[in-house]
Amino acid sequence: MKTTTALHAMKLALNAAWDYQLLTFPNPAVGAACILENSSILSIGAHIIAGGPHAEVYALRDAYTALSGDTSIADSDDAHHIHEYLRTHHNGIFNSVSMAVTLEPCSHIGKTPSCALLIRDLGIKRLYISVRDPNPSAAGGAEILSDSGVECIFGVLEDEGQKLLEPFIRWQSNPFVFFKWAQRLDGTIDNGTISSKSSREHMHALRDRCDLIVIGGNTVRSDRPTLDARLVEGKAPDVLIYSHNNEFDRTIPLFNIPNRQVFVEASLEKINKYRLVMIEGGMGMMEATSEVANWYLSYIAPKIGGGSQTLGVIQEDFEVMNAKITDNIILWMKNKQ
Image (cartoon, rainbow, N blue to C red; front, side):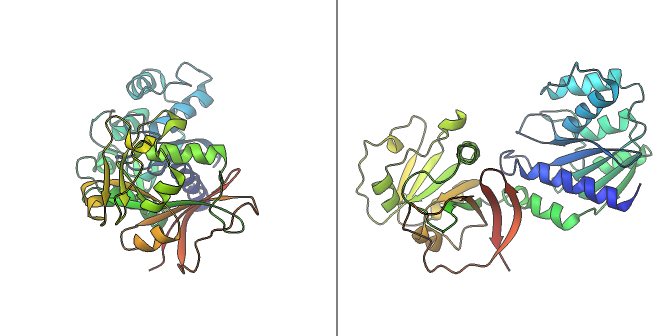
């Protein structure tokens, strides 16, 4: 197979994985693609949520449906059912299929069955892998496959694969912290709703995954936010209000959600007790949290006018990790080293 085909397939797998970055917490974001012998892309899959099918399983499910015409599992999200059905019904249909995966297929059986064993049993002969699995309990899938005669080629777009995996590696032992804001094309960040409904749903889905939200005291007093995940019917994470002044209207919804802890503290030390943390705010919070934020997430709306506040005189030079254009621009970034 041509190198350009493997690179193209891996780029598609990476892009699919980025759509679910952090949404798979505590699992890593992973993408996969199935490739035919004629170099055409047969299917693309991504891990969507912890406990659900892995990226390889979705890609193999869709590849099977396309090749066989059998739609019995086309809409299934049951990992165990998909594994069992493919093993029983594949009839050698994958013998001419290769795969590109952003992360070494898992070897262990956890909430879902082993992807490495499924790939082996379906008869796939070649696997392109971006990075090895850093999780000792899941690593070793490539060894299983190689011992079974599957050609495993590592290092395909490895730098990009490592960037995708950064949050997962960090939250194994430390909090992973990202700063989120929405802005218009003119840089304004105030005065009403800025981002689109789909972007707000994405942000609420991230809140649902987070352990903690950090916000400034002035924002709480002026905006009176709820800071929940109602747009996706998700949970309301704990909240750290970073403030030297403890005077707040405690009747607002933020303080009155069951099973939520709200802390008002003059330091950011509380962050260290959590694993996935979102910071929300403007210029003051960006400056105050610059030493703890690992990444930055910006929703840029195609609008001009309607606001007056910007991030001010802050000067940061970001590396764009991933950019997605929908009805807004979504940028994942980190500070350049």
